[in-house]
Image 1 (tube, rainbow, N blue to C red):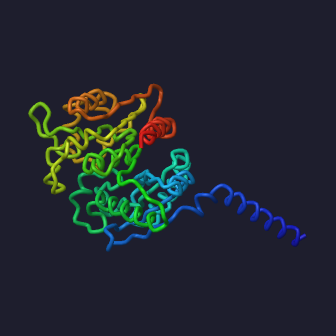
Image 2 (cartoon, helix red, strand yellow; image 1 turned 30 degrees about the horizontal axis):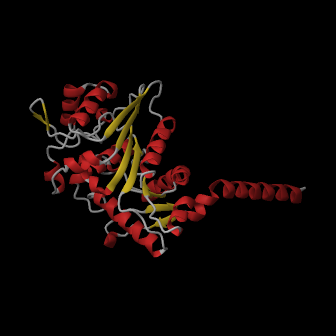
Image 3 (cartoon, rainbow, N blue to C red; image 1 turned 120 degrees about the horizontal axis):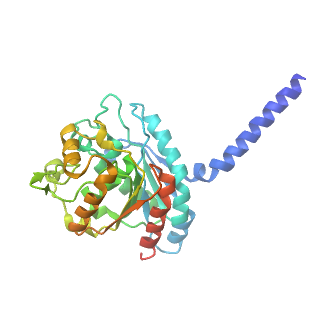
Length: 322
């Protein structure tokens, strides 16, 4: 009897292992894990997945394109492994998109700290640009260093890659994608921004004679980063900014991502909720000449999966011209 029970248990374990191997296998065996490397400019791990199509492009003498998906664990933790596991799972889910687009997927595993909870790294907030904490300082530059490391690694394997990347994100990572593009448009081929926390950074310094400081606007970008905002470069980046018509997720209600004064300013100037601010944001981007399409989808709330296809189709169009 005991022998039969043991055999049954072993059988279940084997079936579970085979099921897991079938489910996770392609990504598990192909995803590369890069450890944090301070000497190379980044203090967090990242994951890289080369799709079959990207491999074929390289073998045909072409250059593959990187799709960068900023991580968004949705939780504060000083344990780096928490964010690494979440980034790995994010990569697993998004690797299907990489296969559909024939691109190389890069997912960073930036820590969203618990002790210094006001540094909302996953949203690239103001504190992420001003913190003196070495491991979190200027994670926008850390991401650029990761991209360069990835391109060097790909080159060593015979895979040439384009210098500019595709960038996508939703909610906090949508805020990151929007803000990174504004800070470093020269690195971005195109960006798909989903539900960026109730307000995408306005590409203007003032509105109604009031200064708009980051992340409300770009008035103090040069002070924060040491380089001026490049409107021409930002305006030239193809962008889609998507939100569900029933989405009421508003980062301005939380002090980890916004200073109270800045949030109050946006509320007073542009509206107290994401939907009422939407036409104002669209108007400011149009006024600045930015190549951005704002898409509001009726009947959808804060749901990435129901909006993902817009970004995929957008990137397909961009890649068709490469």
